[in-house]
Amino acid sequence: MNCTEELLQQCQMLIQRAQSVCVLTGAGVSKASGIPTFRDKDGLWNSMRPEELASMDGFLRNPELVWEWYTSRKLVLTKVNPNAAHEALVRLENSNKDFVLITQNVDGLHARAGNKRILELHGNIERSFCVECHIFYNDVFFDKIKRILPKCIACGGRVRPDVVWFGEMLPQDVLDQAINAAQRCDIFLSIGTSALVYPAAELPYYVSRSDATLIEINPERTSLSGSVDYYLQGHAEVILPRLCPDR
Ligand code: OAD
Image (cartoon, rainbow, N blue to C red; front, side, top):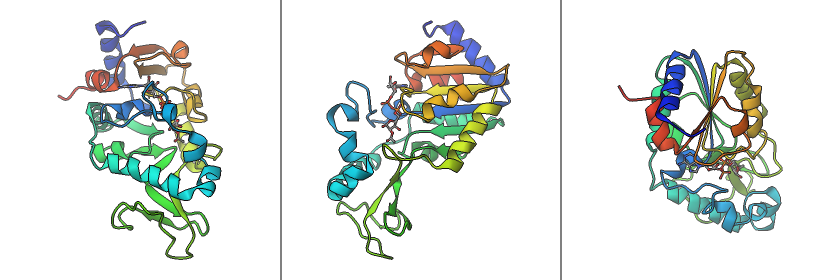
């Protein structure tokens, strides 16, 4: 099924009528802001090695390299802005529904756009913590984005980004809230994610109300596409403003 005008109108009406909306976003939502995805042709994991840059083993082997890579990603964030997809999701939250936005993105763009009910499954690139004593820091504390690996002010330990790396567990309380939101919603939107990384990828399968509608927005089909009620083929920054218009 392609993204026809008729499908868009049906989905817009369903969203308007919904009492409880749960949204899951992935890297595709931030692409129009200028942030690369992970698994597209020009995605980060096509030119970089996740086991070196996004694992605790990689960090312990070469913390400077990992820190430098996250610093360069943070510098990109200082130059970009939320796009029309982020803005449409703010309108959706402000439309007086039970609303939860679950994101795999660590870029903080949903918060910058103005969403409030955000569950960050994979952490946030602007926070860090000491691997020894687990004190948390944010970039404001470090005053400016540091290229040199900082030392913990409390114990001198190495400080790492507060993002979930390969082989690590998601924060359980955040995951529990995400599952709960999926179970109670009457609309679940999966947007801009390849639906390959678990446990995020299984959240749509927690949708359990018999009257619930599952909608996917993605220019490419994913492993989820065959299980949704509406697959809207296209870019989030184009389709979302149609589903959640500014009026
Ligand atoms: P991926 O890079 O795996 O998938 C991005 C998806 O976005 C693809 O399915 C694209 O087709 C789609 N896409 C591209 N442009 C789009 C657009 N303009 N609008 C809508 N969709 C678009 O990214 P994620 O699914 O987010 O984990 O990846 C999940 C996790 O894998 C990430 O959170 C990250 C990564 O390893 C960690 O860092 C822990």
